[in-house]
Length: 506
Image 1 (cartoon, rainbow, N blue to C red):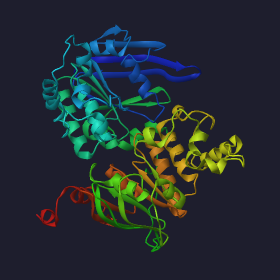
Image 2 (cartoon, one colour):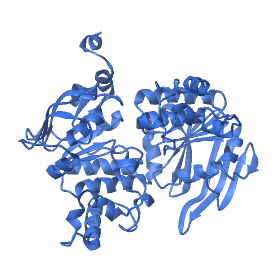
Image 3 (cartoon, rainbow, N blue to C red):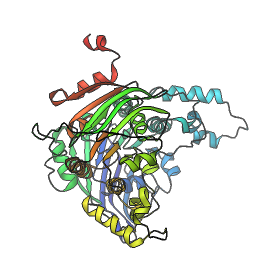
Image 4 (cartoon, one colour):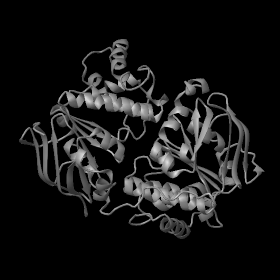
């Protein structure tokens, strides 16, 4: 490439007490390129980007913009220098509109006593419509996680940036929404804007990026031209070893069982889904696919009685259940892990041990109704060993763990009640490739041990690689099932997006 260098980072170091988050970090971004930054959770990617955005200050090293050394003292200074950052963590004001969130910085700096909401909504509409069908007058609290992520991206598109950082922007998006985003990213790069793209998804990197820089354990490993490398080479650089497979072996024909663990019959909720029936068999992992908004999460929450006025029958090992609340579901042995790990799945400020025991505190209690710290710690340590949890101590806050290890704590919480069925909504969202492989292995081992595993995922490769069968949901109904050789991205998308058999035949 003969494009000019916009940003050059040399020998950056950053420590937090005894923890060395960065050591001799290097990075270079050219004008008009899409440069991926890859590495496992804890590799130092976020620390490096937070320094570039002025959120953190380095202990040593140099940052140059256009060949000149700079000190980026704050996110506001970074913005003035032309650096924008779309964070993975959603940071919106829930009690104001989409339009107000998109132009928050503009309205905060305005000296006008009155706000022209209609004009603001028209300006917001022109931006948000490029990404998705969202009414700019809608309150953010009424949006799905996917829609909130699109609003975060729209905020960044309003900035006059020369460098734009995207941190896992598609983690909560459908493939269609992600495709729209990539069209915009490529158009921004064509205008000369330098794009830093952080992602665990190799397919995204290899379809959209020009170069990829790999970090491991806070250090720079290597920079590769995407056209001259392979996903396997990048993954091996990330983890320091070759991953034989991201997905464990599926059930063989001889291993398949006709024994039904969970049976759902004619499940309906007036506003969300209708006449849903399926069976989950012993030993298998059953996937649920479909577009975001099709009713996937609503169906499984209906099974657990987490929301909605649900009708229909749920049976466990042939025994009909009378479920009215989620507590009834837990007592019966059916547990649910939310797609929003940090919002609904974990108590980030509490210890690992307290999180693991949260669903059934009575199991680690004393006869006087108090929690036994010894029993709570013992339970967390036992389940932690089973899941290969990496943490300093089970008394440490969950917030100190990487995304993959946080997800293992959430799974341990489910296992603490001795479940018969575990329902996981986006089980590997926001975790690195090494942790993703470990979680897939854990789920397969649980399935082989007799626990029913039901997985919702927006990542089609994950559904295809992990699951023995996939049910596809469209408009609140089961549109069909794919298995064996028919389990392809094309067949899943056809079932997920087309309206009827005639359209599929055409």
